[in-house]
Length: 440
Image 1 (cartoon, rainbow, N blue to C red):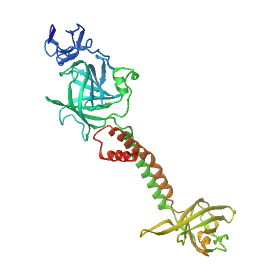
Image 2 (image 1 turned 45 degrees about the vertical axis):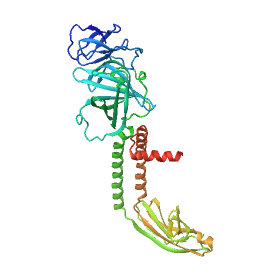
Image 3 (image 1 turned 30 degrees about the vertical axis):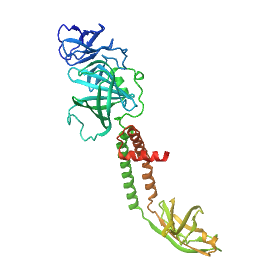
Image 4 (image 1 turned 180 degrees about the horizontal axis):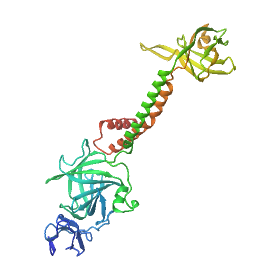
């Protein structure tokens, strides 16, 4: 082991100190002097032991020193405190399976608050803090395992408070509760835990005063990246619920206040001979206030259909309004099981009919006439100011698409996230298996 020059005097812990690299003579600034154990020379890449007064060369580097996306010595604001980049390492996993997955880690230092780790993974950033088991964790969070495997150091430069060199391996287990990730690293000597929180790339760029375009562009979905759709779901659901409650309350008030007055009722039989001749009702009077006029129609049907056209005639002005009531009903058996479809009744309304004297003209048609039958029986009841529920149901249905859209996008986002994990939850694993079966 080669030795270099001895530092003239020990610096206070956390106070920067300059020394000369024993391998190349380049100046090295120790930004966490008194804390750091290893430093990798930024000029020649040599690994130095700075835990003692006598700086030793642990390993001479032959690889060319590379520039880091965030240069060593850069200062940024996180958690309301200034942090300085003092170390950088590139790490990878999957090397033992032939599928390399790489990420970067920056070691940040603050003399009063210690160390943080800033990790960059395909343009996604996470700020980590070492924690003790069961301490410093957010409340009411459930962490789900996302990854477990070997991680290896591929490149290292700067200073560190532990001994680190290229080729070092640890076992890493990551569990997520977006935007948080709990990372546990284990080797033969110790186990450490770090809690990370996802940071948008723009926040990292702003913290260091960097051009966002010079940082890696985000690709894919990070393990602990929060779903942008999940954030919006609570507010949308709250607004939808409030709107639904207001609509429901309004509907029930209107239904309670509706008079629902029966103004006309008839039953008649239309034959093949007179089916085109309208059935004319006696005149009936409607109150002067404007309100709807609703018809409830029924027909005696057995595996057949029937139509009834109702024409409302104003006796005073001769004005006419028309609506059509269609009914069909079919039934039978299949494999010993009875089935049926359709309905023998129909409902529809003339909206906002003014007061006055009116008649109804009823014109019918039916399938029975085409199959050799002779007569079709109909019944009609007419109500003034009837409660209308269809508008309320239509409004409730109109409120559902956007929350449903967010729900689907959120679960699509989660499916894409968990597709990168060997610990996919059963819900998404079932979807994945179904899609795989379809592809086959």
